[in-house]
Image (cartoon, rainbow, N blue to C red):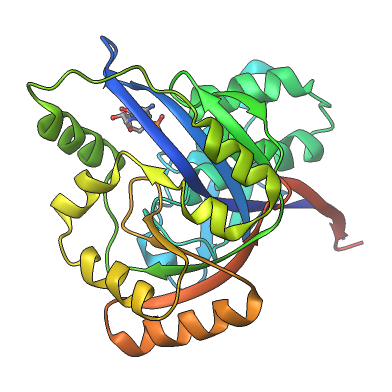
Length: 307
Ligand code: C5P
């Protein structure tokens, strides 16, 4: 019997506790001051040697995940293989728990996960700096998915500096259907027309609140410049945010480019209460509870099949 090795990597979702957006750059991207917090909602990416590059996905929203080479997990395998002059023939299976196209970096997580998993499967031991370079090539949020924890992202979000963070509890309300990140940035540009946009800067008050671990201080400083654009494209989200406030959330926020909404709560018990109230409100499809900071992409283990 032939022996097939496979490697599984677990990768977290993120919420942006501050997302300050600058004016559009000549390359179409926007400079950001992006304070990322990884949260304990995970996808698991398993790679196994195969005849050709294939992707499968399982989970509640699996039908919305592209299974061709546009999937960031497939692109990660392609790029890593090309850089090492080797075949990219690998089967990638994604056990998906992060909302799809939801503003929680689910696609980026799968890219970072597949990269780390292929690196281990192929025994490449690529230096961390090179892995981060490939992540940045894959997408602006992918380096953070690899690193996890809490970090300030500058440039288009790919240059990361770790920041200190206490533990915070969250509820996430998953909306029906995704939002396209480029469309939300375009709407940001449309809403900003005729206004001068300041250079994005991390808020010292927010960084202090994050480090303190005090949820009330963080609640007072959360900020997402993409929120008006996401609400403009999806006005129904206002009702979800209101339902979370009525249920006792300390603060409400659109997660990244949305449409997932994030609710900061005092503790785990409060998270369960707010999640139940949000589900009962009928203003979202489902909810998830999580805490952060969570670790970045982590190899869970390697198994040998058919041994
Ligand atoms: O980097 P990524 O491929 O994830 O970005 C998707 C799209 O989001 C970009 O094509 C761009 O339209 C928008 N974007 C942006 N500024 C950023 C990050 C993303 O305008 N800093």
